[in-house]
Image (cartoon, rainbow, N blue to C red; front, side, top):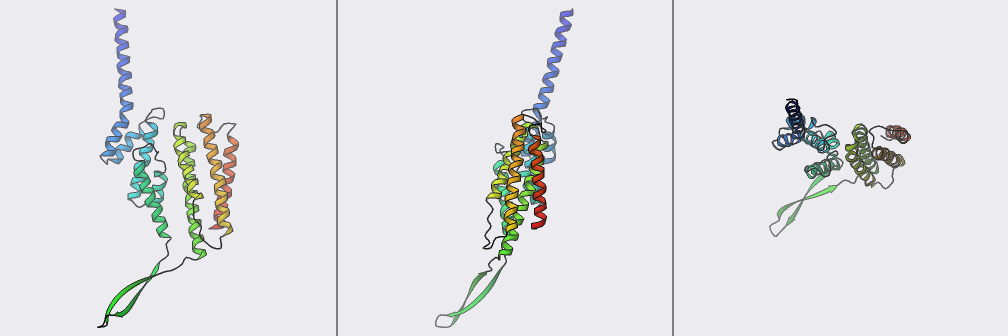
Amino acid sequence: MMKTIKKRIIYLLVFVLCIAGCSKTGHYEKGMEFLKGKQYPEAISEFQKIDAGEKDFRLAQSKIAYIQGLQAFGDSLFNAAEVQLLRVTNDDEYYHESQLMLDKISQRKMNSYIPKTDTLVIREETGSKGEENLKEKIKVETETDAELTEKFIRQEIELIKNFESLYQSAYSAGVESKSNYLSNMRSIVSRLNALDYGAKEKDADALELKQKANIWMNKRIEFISRLIKDNTVNETNTSRSLKEEGDKLYYSVTQHMKKTY
């Protein structure tokens, strides 16, 4: 009799564990179904039910970032979209689409800095009968050094803001997710270094801002890398000095931004 009761208890426990396991692993699949059906609120709800310790947590967070970036992009909230789309991991099936949207955002920003042009209509007589042909000639106004400097500083500040947002997310994220943020943080550093500054007489403050931002960003990256290496969410005695140094550098960068722009 006792053996029978024990067997029933074991079967019941196994059944409960199976149900619990199925309910956990099913959230990602349900979320994907909603995502493919463009039911975005329902998809986010399912992805948010996945705990940090589950194997699908990292990709679920990536999907949430993709959806929020896609929605912000559709609403023309391009700065917010860029922050979210940068969080999409490179092994996500929506990574390529996210990069296309990021490229469009970058192109849009560049276009906003292109100076206006004047159109001149020139009439000239050709042919034996003096027929008139209309030709359009575009006169492109050359950007001044002041305009080029203003554009350069705006691009710097935009990257600085995006980087700090990613850093704050990386700092509070679980150890498993920190690597994804770290990759995007490094991407922004590359974009900062690749910024073109075409002014003939370059502004010293604008160049100094880029230098300060580069040093600060790399210190933040060093700190997050140490957290990953130490397998911890928050700083320890070995990494606390890196965080404090990064905070001081960020204060210096923000003060220089106020001075520059």
